[in-house]
Amino acid sequence: MAQLILKPGKERSLFRRHPWIFAGSVDRLDGRARPGDTVTVVTAEGKALARAAWSPESQIRARVWSFDAEAAIDHAFFKRAVAASVARRSAIPALKGQEGVRLIHGESDGLPGVIADRYGNVVVLQLTSAGADKWREAIVAGLVQATGCAAIYERSDSEVRGLEGLEPRTGCVHGELPAGGLTIVENGVRMEVDVEGGHKTGFYLDQRDNRLLTGQLAAGREVLNCFCYTGGFSLQALAGGAKSVLSIDSSGPALASAQRNLALNPQLDVSRAEWHEADVFKALRALKDEGRRFDLIVLDPPKFAPSAAHAERAARAYKDINLFGFRLLNPGGILMTYSCSGGIGQELFQKIVAGAANDAGVDARIIYRLAAAPDHPIGLAVPEGEYLKGLACQVG
Ligand code: SAH
Image (cartoon, rainbow, N blue to C red; front, side):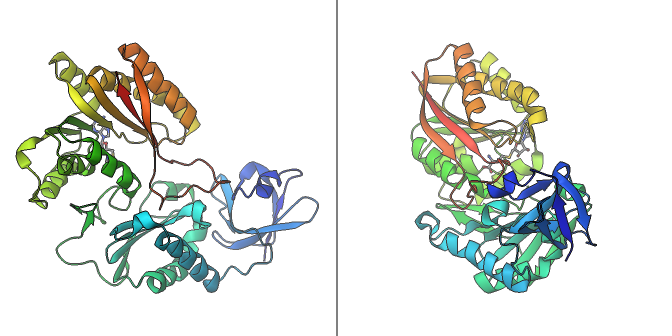
């Protein structure tokens, strides 16, 4: 097996169990390795530390599979790791009875580059690193064994594959997708999941608990849901007894899906829902000019800052939508505001929201800190990635 020799002193992050080895930490590769092959990670002094997957084309040159430098990285390793991830979800009470659950969350489950989401009987798999790509068969076999699912659909079309020199790959790798489409029930609301064409693996499972909370807060309120995608927050708000729900997104197909979702739930009152295809930045200004007011506003935008390099521009964008969010609230109203930008930390996000409240001239306090659902764990030593943070702020 080839050996990845670190530069002197570059083992420190490995001692903290951080699983990435950047190009700048690598002195050389002794021996030959193809993309995705397992290499042994060795300090400049010759001490073996870990087994990792080799990604020669990426700035992240290797990702650790095991901090045991003698571990066998083979089919059995992946079967065990997949089974352990699935078992962790089975032990979480809040996930009991949920049809949509993230089973594998990459680095945080010790499986860098592997995402697996279960939607009923179907698992959607996304492989984003050379190492994960190489072990496709073992990961698929592990998922079939651990879940007994009828089908596994691969959605490896994320842009980050390009950084690894990998082509996109999509299609069934086990069984067949159900004819006539796939739906799940999330806390009483039926939603379609477009595993072939939807965002990510078809649905934003990380927001499950926050959508439920929105429903619980919505009774009797006039709700505005910005960046509504397929209407997850909107439908929970309706289910929770909202007086009205205005939902905005710039994507026509997302809004069409949202309306199909509403039709899938005959228990909800269609007449309380209004859908608006528009750019949120413009729509918020227009609503302000029209003198509209709301009691509950959800802002769940796409990632404005994929990395720290975009943080400044992204901060302005977050500030802008939060400022208008606060301005559009009635007294006692609640703003539920999110960021999934890795480049904006928790503390900075709170500062931006606080600045927006100040500029809007409102007195606001945090009533909930909002995080991703527990099937999206964050490894303590794992990079921040695009983890979800949010605040629910109530104005005076
Ligand atoms: N809240 C959703 C997920 C939001 S994803 C859920 O729980 O499922 C982000 C959404 O923002 C996408 O649907 C995308 O179409 C939309 N979007 C991105 N930029 C936008 C803009 N400037 N104005 C309006 N919608 C936008």
